[in-house]
Length: 380
Image (cartoon, rainbow, N blue to C red; front, side, top):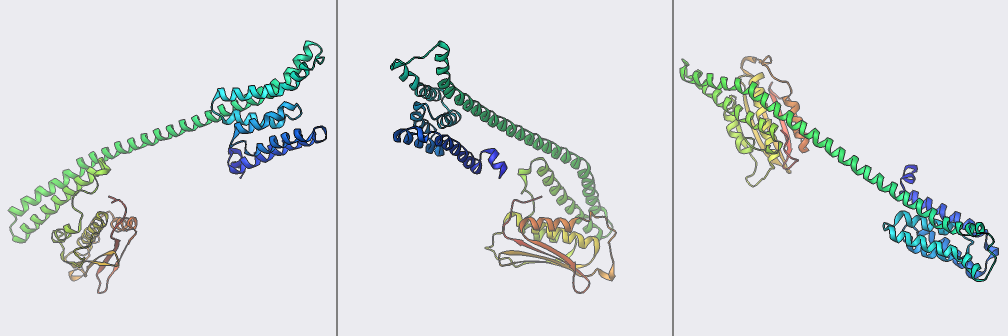
């Protein structure tokens, strides 16, 4: 709350208005017994108007002018004029208000001159002029200084915001440059080796002694070509994140993925034809099947698998189950990043879904994903 008062918030404004009205009211009490009812009424109007000085500053100045003309009440006119000087933009308007307040405060002296009163020495005349001048000039100068200070603070805040925007833009440019560098390095390092695998697989598919080896070479060649396509897509996203969404990754690509996976897998699609999952959901389903089948190749070579898609209550269900490998073989030593399932869970969580993975009945393994039909922008 103290911070709100310091910033001039609602609580701080109400407190300041209360203090101002109380101070002017206290001054009013000192002259109650010395003025008539009409003069007292002008004082009451001047003091009461201070409560709305922030909303209608010029009207409050006008309400305080009669009080200044009596020569008895000074706080209410000073508060009114200072607020107007701080809040009103036009310098000429503020100067006119200050001049009017000066002339009003000077009226008792002018009245004395008209009556032929004795003013004394020039020093006494100067002293008589000094009070009205201070009444008008002091609050006006303080109010304009406060206005200039506030305007300077606003400009400094704008400058800080602009500097922060420049820093963010610089960071974004640095990230873009780093993405481009990573894309170049991945292309130079990974694509070279994948291309060699594709070439060697092509040679194997032609020169191998047995039909099984030739078919394996052809299959490796197709997988290598697909890997190159996905690598190019990933590199394009690194260069330009707005390019995300190209390349394979839809439900329509799943039959080909299963067929070319190298796993003896069946594919069952029970999703109604009129269902319209979002592209991010389709992509997550594609990656789930791809990772699960890759794990079958690594950890259960030769095992049979089944891939099932279904739709239930607006959620796409993706189940990839495999049995145990023939003879209990285990390929756990095949190199892998070890982050595949974690990546699937993170991708599903971004969509508001989830992935469960664990041993299945009969010694196999089951990967089950639950993906809402629509989700946020696809993550790569």
